[in-house]
Length: 126
Image 1: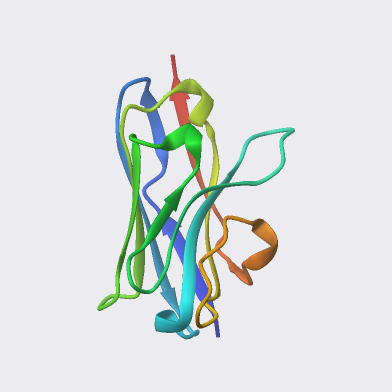
Image 2 (image 1 turned 90 degrees about the vertical axis):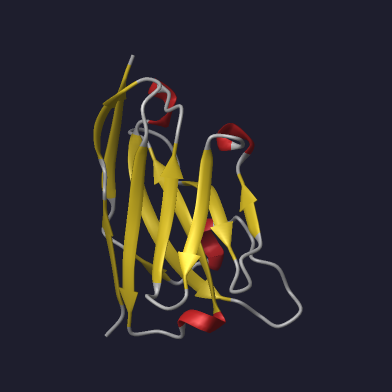
């Protein structure tokens, strides 16, 4: 059974930090792209950051320099360190996994990812 369980969300003031975690099981971790996505009310789900099995990362322009995605291959756990948070970062944050095809990169597209967690809410007050 595939499981992705996010934790670490909460309410912070602008300028603060949070660290999200995503514990996973039930799929091939080492053959997967992993990503963080977010969805604000009334908006489409968007990619925040993705990382491949070798640790190569891609970030959305809106979070570059503030958010860092990482993965612990020993624990099958994904992380998102979020610093200098802004009100515009307020959203439900989702962890996702998708196949990492040999010779390809991990794309920052919702449609590429197969498995999803239930989400964790991040609220930033200005």
